[in-house]
Figure (tube, rainbow, N blue to C red):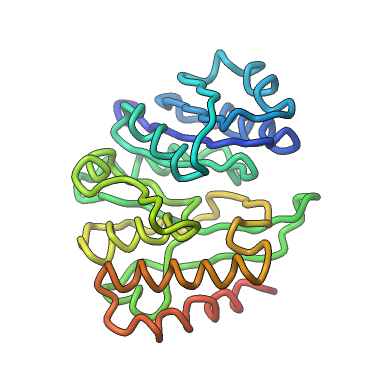
Length: 248
């Protein structure tokens, strides 16, 4: 299993309050064959100083201006040399120390192209306030507003080489569009890891204001239309409604 190399990418910008927790959760993983890449967007706070404290555990550290999160992710993907590529956002952290071991085990099966799992949303005190629980992917799930939790999304590096990386044309929906392109349009084999993989601190880019939310819907609709969703308006309505089940 250790022969499977996992490239893990963390993108940061002014994340001094959370980046250390993120990095420490990576260091704590009991799977060793990990290539950790941190792409910082020229932070102006102490983020980079904190990152450099852990430089011995990080294969690549870059700090330079970028065009946003997905541009930075694309930089990391191009630098990644592992068999498998995944992300861990600066505000997020692994839910346990065996996550990457489970990921590597799943990808030992050559039929596994993509993996995703469950997610907890937490507040600043790390109290769980929402639970994203999903299921094994079935064909046409995307047509009904379903999507996997992007912070739990891992795939073979070869998919980026053949299908492309994150498109900046879709704004905050670039992650949704990529998963649509990989899983719905191209129909690769996906594996559901029925385990909480990541704890994600609330406050996503698309939810900061009503205007951002409207723009996110526009980008979602564009992604649906360009990736073969049969009835995109129905999918657009169902997508946010699915979040209601995450509260408890």
